[in-house]
Length: 401
Image (cartoon, rainbow, N blue to C red):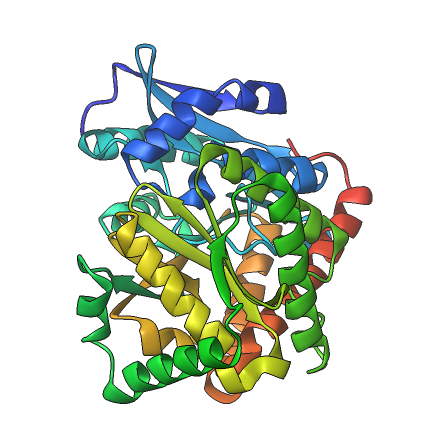
């Protein structure tokens, strides 16, 4: 790797220090990935709602006064007091495409200084867990090769697949890439809906009051659908709901929230919850009223949202994680998120390695035998169970360094 003599690494362990980085942090993200899950705005909202269970440990790399790289990390205690160093924002909010925020020309140098620091403090962590690590680019290989060179037990596995659309210049051009049946059904459903209900309205949230109304309806529709199937639903916890009310308002004020809805006779029957940062639209969660299923409101609204994304200059529509067949009926491609785990040479580290092997085997069986449509709610349930366990461990062990 390249020389790092002129670079300085700063360790941020308090929220006040992290908050002071907002302007230059978001500027760096916008110049590089544009991923909403790495935006300071998203992370600070997450910390406000979930940070009481964690210990901040964010790394910032500077060249002189200029921030050229950052890695948002945190400590969290697991079962048995395992000290897990992982991405800030991990857990039930299910972030995607994570990694080091870095100027491309400085990736090698920034990666080196960060890895040297993480290796030097290995006595303070039992497991370094970088989940939802974006597979694109050289970063995963650089990470794995470094830890192998330093004889540290690690594994790098595919964790999730994310469907996305490479958006062309017009919606009509995009539709030509879809099947004849897909195009016909979309046209038929939209025409029938508008003919039967002339009051049909497609819109994006513009104001805080409208946001509160539409997001509340999204939560209601989502919970009705999944609790009827016997699952808790993504919005089962107050903490999760509060986080999304807060973070969506922050991004609305930034002009980067894209919360679309379909309304008939003043009743919202479908919602599509997205964010647009730079030229990428990220679709976090859609939902629709199943009583209107004959009109395919979810698909009709999705088509409108994609069309508007193209008109607003988006080059990509990312469906994020999940292998539901509906996502792949829209997508033109997919990418992978990886899980990198590095285990310290401690009894806790080795025990966690064994547990990870067992859990990965169970996950593989789940992928093979559990229907795709119920994997996400089932995974949400397991995430919440792990959060409860981590909280119990935190309350009964000494504070993480």
